[in-house]
Length: 308
Figure (cartoon, rainbow, N blue to C red):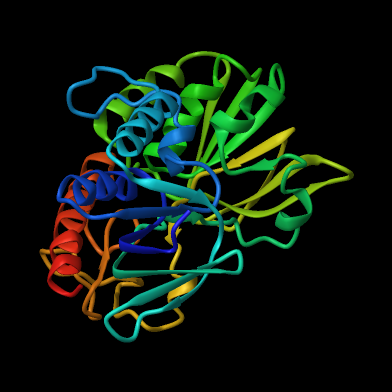
């Protein structure tokens, strides 16, 4: 495989793959570097109902279709961890697994990672009852009692997904209102009328306890400080995500903790673009990630042509 390209994309989620499609169609040679599997959060979402053109679509299938389309258009992909960026000068460098790749334009689309509970036993129980992906790990808790922590779309959708699998599902949320779309809230509220879904509102997680595996979750009421203990076999954490910006090492301007871009998806460094969940914007959805990718891919290809 070559090591010099017009455009290098770091991250293989919807934004990254769309950027590859548009940059390649614009005539650029494109390399996409993805550390694990394409699709990101989308690939582990079992049912997507808000992607235009599809009433319902499996996230893994959608991700694979995007990847196949990008590959067919000539986008090359390597599965490796990008370890370092050198963004000075006309040619940018990305070091991944000891190999240096160069390009005239870079697109950052590393996405975001799940926020943790920030309790003392969290690391101890990761993979031993604590999970950040209900679709990935829900099957391990068949006919068991689980708790979902959060109040947004992901948390409520996790409850919906887990309710036919687990014997009991608790939803733990720090306030009474939800940040989820109304259609998701309506479906969740219907489930709460059944026997195996129960809301625990105005509670935060104090700790998770157990022996070799999770056995209990300790909750604190934010209104009166009272403590509640729930016997659970698993805890699914869905309290939001943080952008994957560690690789940037302070080189890129941020806004609200996310990458700051203009309407052309340009960062403060010429030739460096960004898109997807790690940029500062009001709505983070597949549709907005794809929009970011289309703009970034097109402009990155134009920039590369001008600066060869």
